[in-house]
Image 1 (spheres, chains in turn green, cyan):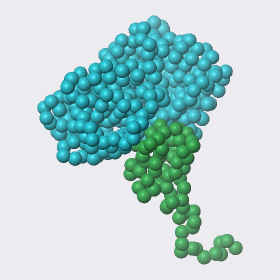
Image 2 (image 1 turned 30 degrees about the vertical axis):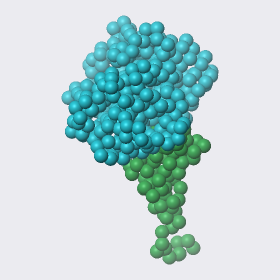
Image 3 (image 1 turned 180 degrees about the horizontal axis):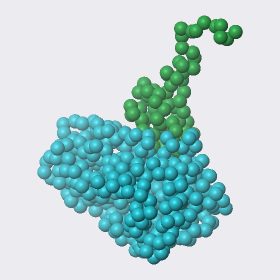
Image 4 (image 1 turned 45 degrees about the vertical axis):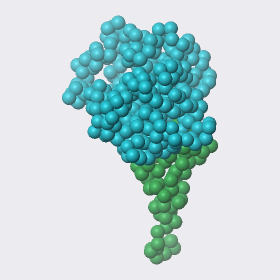
Length: 79
Length: 390
């Protein structure tokens, strides 16, 4: 029955999420080591007043900051 | 708005030496050193190992309170745990960074530098040939007008970015590190231990650096792109469980080591970048303390001279970049290429090399001899050596 359904003209919800993801930091886990800042191609990550800040408008959802975080404090979320 | 001549951001080894040298080269200059953390030297994000000759250019370690251990041996561990002891004298020292950084900062202060701890630079803009730097500290917000800014703000490297320099790092050149301070384990307290291997620390290595007879920094660095989703801490926990299952974990730290060659431009109008912030770590060893101090010395002196000459333009300050590249930057490019070549060799190669090298009598087992021996017994290494020396 599934095969019979017509192909959607619209992206699936999964696709939408992937196209519009931004990085989020869990500040309870974040150690403020600063490792992720120079990894960010659009320089969207800032460390100020002992808080890691991610500029949603600048984040391109490229994932480059996610895996290198030694404490896994960063994750991608739907924008 | 305080007017200052040299504003140094970050009181690690690069910043402390930069401030000290700027003040020594220009006793009449107003030199201000900012440290974001509440205490210089803390938190320690470092394995604390340093070579003997490089350290002695800046401070005498004999009997110093900021030294934890003298190191006279290096023990390499192949991926299959084969031990290779390398005979070297006066290899280096394990520092107590909390005390060492404080010692350097105190020297700067004694020379006339104003140190402000708990004070963070929050942004800067160029105005009438000066940098206007906003800060936030215990007394609230402040604004400095500086002829020269020395960016020694470490791995996060934001100050250079504010000045328009590209301080970014490709993900393959960032080592993610985790380290425990471990007590109650057996090791040779005069040796550092280094273990390589794709299953142990992909893209990096694991280390044990003694801090006392039974206390050591035990850590490792990995390149996340090669780790298959496992974090540095998970690799470290696995290594600890295998090698030091009964050690008491007294402390834990994480951080990044940039194993990328020096940034293309370490100088621009009124700004010099030094140390980790300028990617001045040795890309092969991951060591950066002495490099940072050498760059700091160069930056401090260059800043003082440029102010004396009334020219702090990017063109004038380019001498700093050139001098750094001649001193160490070009060597780092070679180390970087060597690291890339070594990464293509697998665990089996290192296991075999370790057994070959152990056939050399221990007293004659210097790093140079190991390398020469390896070239004869393992022809695969010849192209690596060729790349290194070309």
